[in-house]
Length: 104
Image 1 (cartoon, rainbow, N blue to C red):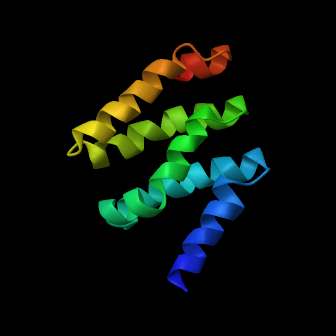
Image 2: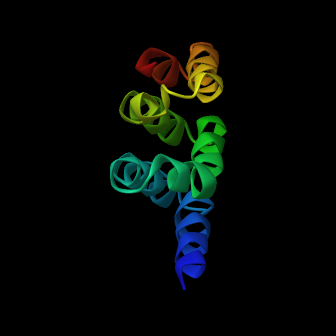
Image 3: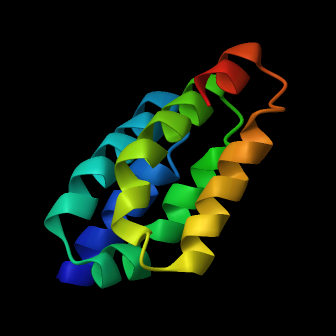
């Protein structure tokens, strides 16, 4: 049952064709990282979260940039992941959409 719920969250939100639902997944992640263990979040949601940094819709990428401020501190203990998040933000500075580049 738990895995079905996790799968539904990822497929219905993170992988949705609706940019509003993908942004909703980012809001979910900001709460989930506070609620679940770091290991649980990393295992089940992190890959989907990171994928949204390259979303086709600028508003989703912008929300991702804003969400990193909330999520990154939970993973500062993991230098590899922390560096990956910082690298994503750095690459977003050259985003083709000026609003996204500014949001970083």
